[in-house]
Length: 94
Image 1 (cartoon, rainbow, N blue to C red):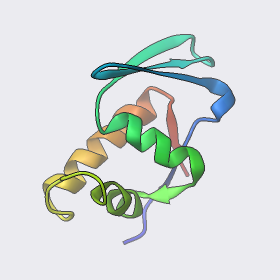
Image 2: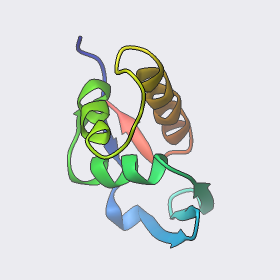
Image 3: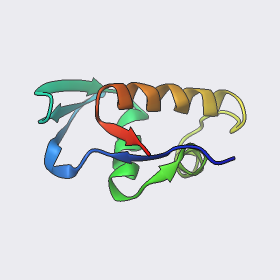
Image 4: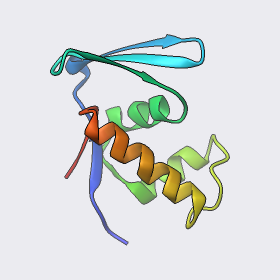
């Protein structure tokens, strides 16, 4: 199933700082700081290096994390995180 391809905002626009259970991400374009929890920082990290579909991203995340079945709860969780990250301007869809 094809769909949008996601990519992270350029590295020059983001300052990422791990803070124990959270990761602070300062988005220079908006001047806002976002506090993220897993798997959002990992999504940003993967998408910083390449542009992927949600299915390909889920496959990559599933290598390191227990996300539930790919067709159900894992896909729904990922879609929700992608929508949140896109709304914050930290990723974009093509």
